[in-house]
Image (tube, rainbow, N blue to C red; front, side):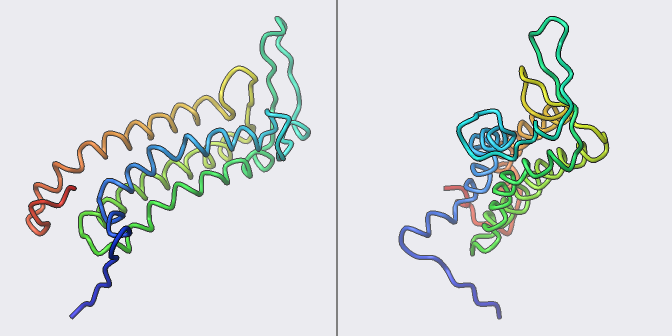
Length: 173
């Protein structure tokens, strides 16, 4: 026999299956600006001063500056993305649909954290531009695509719940 301790009162609201998906869809609103700050774009906050370790290649027209950086100088700026892994904490929920959601959302979040790091390392050189998000264009495009997949998974998840005969009929709150 397995004993599951349930959360009572206000904390019981955290057992809703939608929270892990909400977390991975909304947290980039915090982590992406934080990453940009760590790169040193803001000038007002503590930064990793990535640009101090990169080679500047000014644009002929002067509209865009491009820096070529070694991955080891840029990888620490991905650390705010570790917050996306909080979605795995819902694995401790007593509700089966919430645990399923935590697995799916956490895995999508982990992919969104690991993918830019792998692209940075594989490329050997990270290109930063003043007119676009930091990192190689492929990294930004893939990260945005995975964010859209996260939204799609959140929208599709209730239909998966209906197909799960082991979950209660009113699993979605």
